Image 1: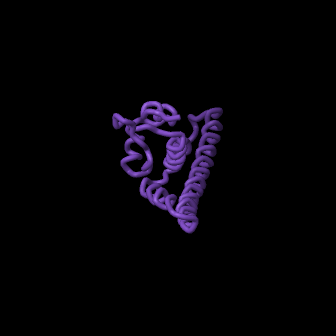
Image 2: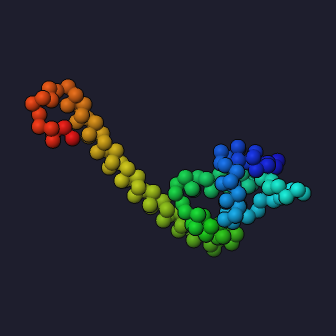
Length: 131
């Protein structure tokens, strides 16, 4: 089955201009055109878009995506390079996750502290202790 850009955008939940941008950036180099020059997207194109979207959601840069796309055209020997790119990004995500966990813990402590204060007579407390 083939899809127009509007249909592909709806299926992937991306804007048509995003699909055009990905094509311009050579992230979707195999998108074909019909007799009138309109883009037509295949199921394989939609699968690539899904992977690109997922990686973009994980903050993988366009540069890294391009490199991975170029490497995907190679043979088995370049698989390790693709793995290296993803592992480096995975490490960044894990570091971000650790930072977010620390922040979440601090927010939880703060909420609990404020809930305790909510049940107290605050008129006798020093205002600095309210933070």
